[in-house]
Length: 133
Length: 79
Image (cartoon, rainbow over all chains, first blue to last red; front, top):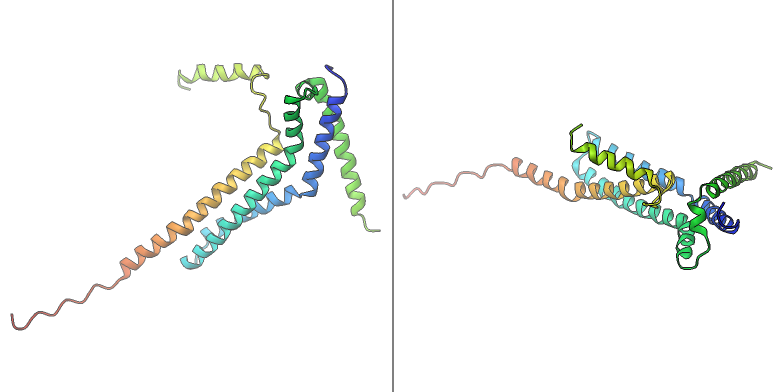
């Protein structure tokens, strides 16, 4: 493995921060609500027996909601990936060896295994916290 | 497959062998998320277009078709 273990630990920290951000900001439910809005819009357009005036109002409201939901989800997605991207950008000006570790297969394997251990531990911890006392 | 596509396909396959060129990897989560965001924006623009253009135009066409024909002008009796 090229370099030391420090860049791998920096990358792991960035990945952990990204994972925690994704968990706290509830990114998956936001995309689920976006998909639900799309399904509802399709149902409104395909529905028969409803006046065009009502459809016009409903599609206008749904379009606004869908745009707001899309932009929110995109912003959250950018926030979630920001730690890793920032670390790679910082490495461009201040050489920390992060990019070299990012494109090194052994470092990637180590990162993958450590990230999987973290995800498993976090998942178990989250489940335990959800248990009623 | 048309003959001119074979060199392009060969070039694309050869480019995938050199991973250091692109350095533009995005994971499946970020990739699918970005696709979802783009689809959401496109869908909302489509819905807004339907709402602001299609239904008003449809209403206008329907009102033009259903408008009763103007009554014939009474002829001037003196003429």
